[in-house]
Amino acid sequence: MAGPLGDLRAALGPNAGYLPLSLFGALDFRSLAAPEGMQAFTGDPNEIEKYLQEHPELFENDNGDGTFSIRTIVPLGSVVDPDAIATTLTSALGSAKTVSFTVAGKADEASMELPVQLDLRMADAAAAKQLAQSLADLAKISKAKVEQHEDHVVLRSGAYAGGASHLADSALFRRAMAGGVAHPGVAVYVGGGAMAGGPVQAVGVTAGRDGADAVLHARFVIG
Image 1: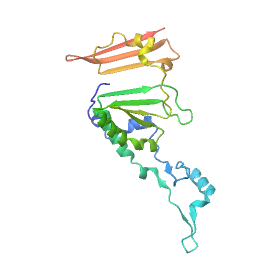
Image 2: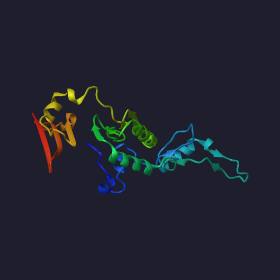
Image 3: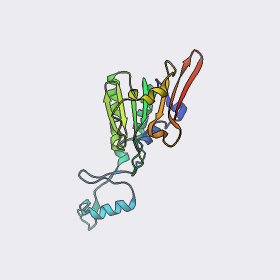
Image 4: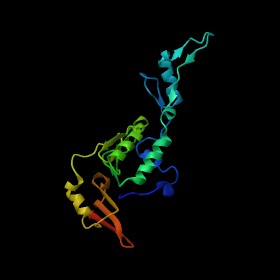
């Protein structure tokens, strides 16, 4: 999508940033951060009880009155501010020069995390560097990776593997996208495994403006 997209909160509400966060598996804030050198675990009471039983070193008998104290296990939400990450991501999505979203590969069977990549092209390399630093804590509440490449900031879920070639090298991609709108504001391609099980092999969609008119072009590759 060609940007800037503007204030997404006006269309999607004040929590617009949580939608992309959910795609990266970053909405389970029950996770607990254990003291350094100890295993982190989720907030399941049974799991916590088992963990405490297996780690007597957490307990300290130095209260002086026969009672035990336990070392603090800090909730991850108090270490990382998910609201700040969501707000930053919402702002970045609205101000980016281009927004590219890719789903490629297979979902993680254990966590059902989707194989997604979000590529934001910012105004310049300095803006991209600042955004990457602001989103660095995303890796603490998910398996996502945040990388900066010149004026691009790329977020990849833990399940995303990517491909070994470029879409432009695919004959199926070229067929689906042929004849599209000359200067699209939105371009979408769906193909490969996503279209398995039916006669449609791929779909290419472009949309843009021609004066006061909105123009949409869709091509279905069948058989």
